[in-house]
Image (cartoon, rainbow, N blue to C red; front, side, top):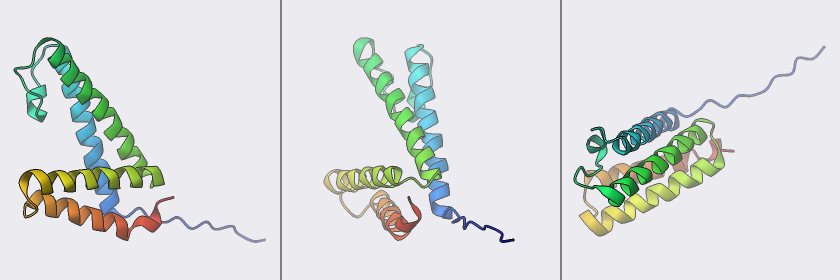
Length: 129
């Protein structure tokens, strides 16, 4: 009688941390957008401008809600080590690196942080399926 053993690849700690942080950010953006739509304070905490009213305010809130939902989906994909989440995370990081380079200069803490995360994700790319 043979015993079937499946090998479970452990989730890299850095990917788990990234998934949790991305999920929390997504949730906060979602809540912020909803609060903003309801006319309650809360959006300011995450950078939604408080002086937007009317169509601009609703548009900002809707963008926050959509981005929040996308980030929560990305967190779920990262947690499950899905290849689509890996690719989406790399694209997001590349966008951030280019933004830092063009807007604030390359020698910033944010630029080096995203560069480090980018290199780390490439190092653990084999764990994604």
